[in-house]
Length: 336
Ligand code: KG4
Ligand code: ZN
Image (cartoon, rainbow, N blue to C red; front, side):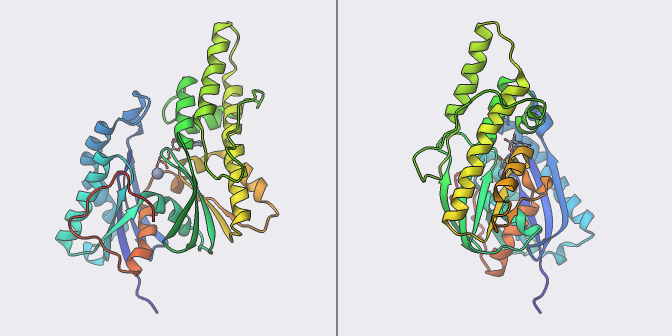
């Protein structure tokens, strides 16, 4: 029988300072997340400089809390994992330096993790992977379809050509005077509206798994502008519902088409937008009766957290993929 191992993971790529302890890459011992959303709200988006300052203030507190809650000692931790990238450089650096300092001081190996691999592996905290699998990543910074033929093997088959899905939600929320981050507010407001406005769906060329949301964004902005000029009433709930339907339709259809084409055994959805109730429902309906199981993590594991980084680090730990002491934050790290 293999010996149990415990990874302490750190995530600071955007606006959450997070630390988690994960057993064997699959079981959450503790998962601490300090969100900065309140500080960024009044600016309508994440301010990188403010994010970095918060990470500096929070990182040691969050790490202490993770160890305290787990009732573990540093001796019981086998490795330190950290998000290497992509993300905001000033934010990533805080996590990477904290991880390096602890790993060096406590004599533990250091594991570098790609943020998107983390979002994918959030699912392994709930279910075992079966390959080949298809992952739909929909977050504030990413919209990607990735085929995995085995652990740690990623083939990006589609990505956004402009805005990420979450970014589109946040921008349209701003136009509708909803607070940041806008995704959950649009989700809620859309429930009170009808999909009565015909916004465009960017299918792109036939067979493409790429996405584009900038045309939709312009279309919503033009619609609002025209209505205002004509002094006509804008029903915000209908705008929210119609915009959301346009995003959800494209995400659902492209995911379904890719799942069939690549003959996958599982589809997993990850990233903050995976929390969207309409997207969850639409995917569930589309895959119902298809024999392809659909896995969507619980809401707390959809948005940024360190448990997912610890889960993705598991496979690297087992393969002894460790980082040298000169590991640096890489804001545009490629998933490979
Ligand atoms: O994965 P995440 O926490 O951070 C990034 O790595 O980007 O995703 C944050 C994004 C934001 O754009 C937020 O508006 C969106 O996820 N989001 C949602 C919902 N909850 C969060 N978008 C649509 N519907 C939701 N319920
Ligand atoms: Zn993320």
